[in-house]
Amino acid sequence: MKQHVRKINITPYLFITPGLLIIAFGFLIPMIMLFAISFFKGIPGSGLIDRTFTLENYTRFADPYYFKVLFVTFRIALGTTLLSLILGYPLALLINRTRGFAKTILLVTILTPLLTNVVARTLGLMIVLGRHGPINQLLDLLSIPKFTFIPSELGIIIGLTQVFMPYMIMSINSVLSNIDFSLQEAARDLGSSATGAFWKVIFPLSVPGIIAGSLFVFLLSFSSYVTPRLLGGGQIMVMTMLIYQQATALLNWPFAAAASLILLVFTIILVTSYTKIASSGDLRQDDAKQSTDKSKTTWKKINSDLREFLYSINALVSRSLMKITILKNAMTSSGKFFSVISPVISKIVIILIIIFIILPLPLVILSSFSESSMISFPPKSYSTRWYTGLLDRPEYIRSFLLSVRLASISMIVSLIFGTLASLGLARYKFPGREFIRSIFLSPLMLPAVIVGIALLRFLVEIRQTATFQGLLLAHLVLTTAYVVRTISSSLVGFDNSLQEAARDLGASAFHAFRTITLPLIKPGLIVAAIFSFITSFDETTVSIFITGGRTITLPVRIFSQLEYGLDPTVTAISSLLIVMALIAITIIGKVFGLEKFSIQ
Image (cartoon, rainbow, N blue to C red; front, side, top):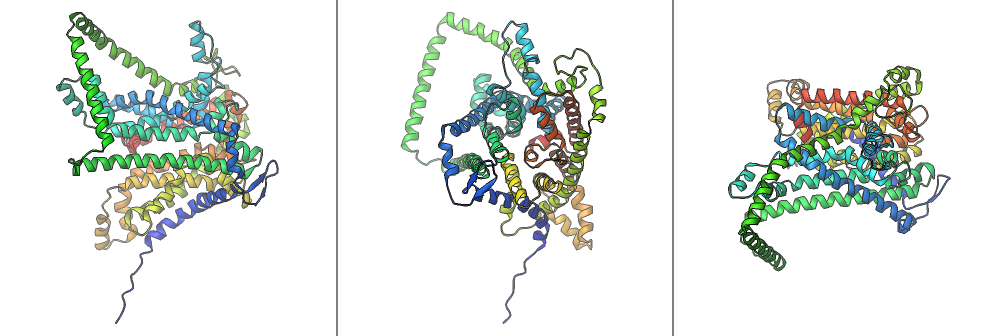
């Protein structure tokens, strides 16, 4: 009797293997090595490692100094998250309720800073918050003493809010776009005020977007390096600066690895907590639909009764007060006053928030035309000397050409391997598919500083530090992950039967792909190409760890200059980066649509 041997389809594995090798050598192996050395003892200043097992690197965080660093980092991240939520929610509401050309303008306003290099944005913030910047000039006109924003925790919080608030806005907007606002109108018809209807109907439904946006902003702020380093002037120590100091200055690799893993554990806890909260919310909704007659727990019942009791008292007091004619007339008059003044205040607040998001970019461009070598606002006279002077700065030209070369190769390679991996993950079902998908996307979930130090340690072991090959590997890890994410989104809902039908009619696999699949995912490919190029060209945090000598990219060159002070040449280069972001936004809007891109 013949046994039927199950034939294994190796096609999906062939599709995902090239991209998976990039992730393995550029991310997984370095992370394993980082985890291993965190349990060894370092010899500060020498770079040598005593491979005796120890937990000393972790117990050192019980020291008051290191605990304070962790606490300050947490405080800055929390302050940034709260400020981003307070300023971002009204703008998310406005974007959701706006239509047509006005909505396009709002999306461009939000997305342009998001695609602009973080160093260029931080340069704008250094001008805005500087001692002679527009904010302190305004305080001076109002006869208010000037405030030192740089260096200070407040300056870092303001800077991180400006940098990361678009993530909060887009997260909330993506949830608001799925809310039926007729529910709010129904609440109004039942006698609720506009404010009451919002807080009782719309706001609770938007909580998932608030949680997701808060998670993004908190993690990005907690793991940020460039903005705290520049706006803190090196005087406000945070976790990422501690990691960089221990790895590159003190050469204490094990302690730097331990600090990185503490940051990683904190990230995993937050992501897991968010996942459980989201899933528990879904489970509660399912339980409510399936078993509404289940009895409540004792605590829930007491809590519910207490709320009803307080609500009854509140309603009774309100009705009693409203019976007083004088108070009723006063409330009516004040209500009319606030109904008139409230829209005006709301518009002013929205305009100020938009100015807060976009102001650093035009200030950078304006400052780049200043004739003076001292950056001040507004410029006393104008000139193009800093643009023409770029030709006399070979180090900037060399860094620019290196960044273009690196971004071009990263874009081409990641677009090919990332698209193959996306097709393999979308078309075929095989064991471990979801796990492999998470492996591809994992570099985007972890703080960039952890990826940077892990890669640096790996490159030290294989003797590829400060080389183009090592830099290319680092950028390929990030761009491949972005391509997989973008193309996978384009393949959602793709009907595989169309290509199968073409194959049944005699078309080759390549011809079917070229005539059917490729046209359908073409917009996603264009956006993935643009996004991967910009990601590589603008990448700063990971590159700071692994560049050196003649492999210094343009963003790292700008960052290094800003560490020592403002240079008008840097404003000219940053202005060109802003223009590049505007061009990218224009192309994405034409090909993909800004609203669809912002939601994804």
